[in-house]
Amino acid sequence: MNADKSMRQLQEEVDRHIGQFKEGYFAPMEMLARMTEELGELAREVNHVYGPKKKKESEAEKLIEEEMGDVLFVLICMANSMEIDLQEAHDGVMEKFRTRDKDRWTRKEEQ
Image 1: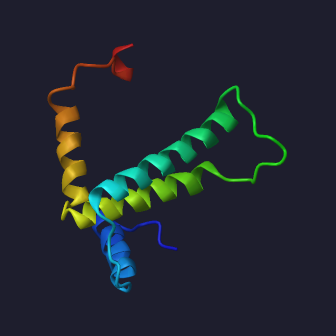
Image 2 (image 1 turned 135 degrees about the vertical axis):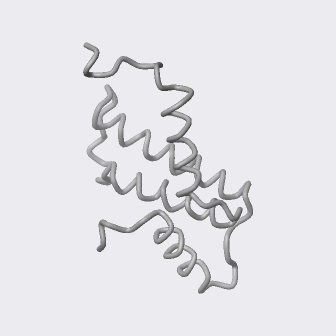
């Protein structure tokens, strides 16, 4: 497992994986439904660990990082199918935070 993969490398890895199947990527609405399902599973795990609703003893053990991995995989699939470069999307949103939202929160050195 390589922890130093770039977002582009992750997108390429997922594309190679999906590319080996005739079905290919799901349609955007199907992926959005799957993303919603995976996000719900992540929310459930976060609620079990950090919220008031604890897991039933009969429920299977899942980890927050597994659920985040599922969300990331579906996000990458969706981006790949729409030919969106997530690294460029990330760079764009970070630029927005550095410019438009630069004074939105109190910086640590200003406390």
